[in-house]
Image 1 (cartoon, rainbow, N blue to C red):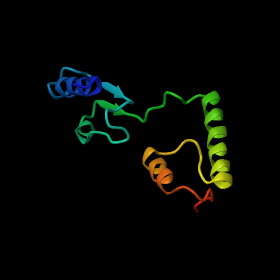
Image 2 (image 1 turned 60 degrees about the vertical axis):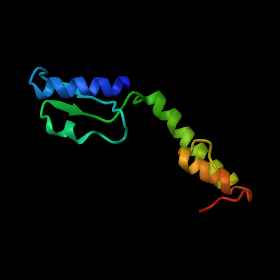
Image 3 (image 1 turned 120 degrees about the vertical axis):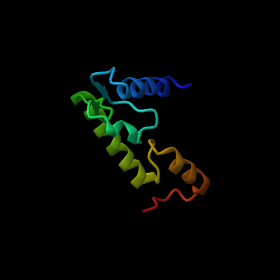
Image 4 (image 1 turned 90 degrees about the vertical axis):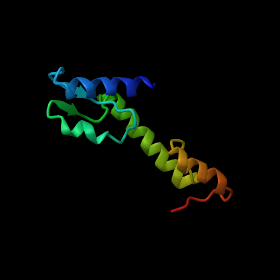
Length: 100
């Protein structure tokens, strides 16, 4: 069993049996989807994963996003693509033109 699935099973069990006073979660086994059962617990706080929320990492991500935009406009594809999109682009590429 996946470590995250195991962990969430434990959280469910402890919360259901009122043996856990509170929990705060920011990583989920199937992100970005959140198991709807977690929403029923008033003592569980759910947050998006924010492990990279610093000024330095935000600056790096800004530059990377702008670089991807520039690359898309100049060569038709950025470097950081969603896997499914990247696969379709690799199958249909050839013109080198940006597809808008």
